[in-house]
Length: 114
Image (cartoon, rainbow, N blue to C red; front, side, top):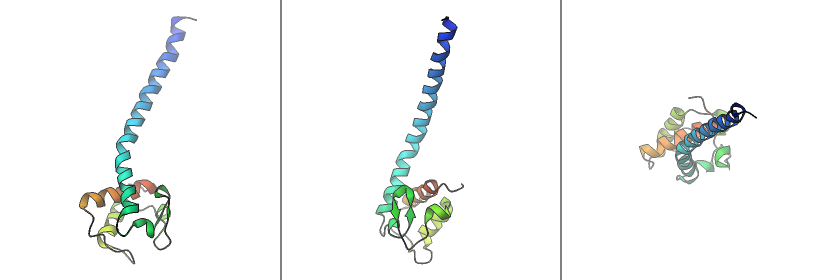
């Protein structure tokens, strides 16, 4: 084997490791917000999980809409959280940051168009 033939696998391995590091960094950056959003979804008072089905949070509520089906964007979720809608109450005890994290989480978890 020539040196050129040996260099190609090394270059490929290097490129793959760079791509993996980049993807890991992006997933890690999104991770804490998704975890915080999931925690709010199941732990807010009252818990969103009581009424809503959301696969990412492993919930199966039977009162509110199935969020995976309607795929609400973050703005729609935020409006519902702040004002309430139908039987859903307004969440007046959540901070602006918590509402942002929760609404972004729901939108990302459902694959909503942004």
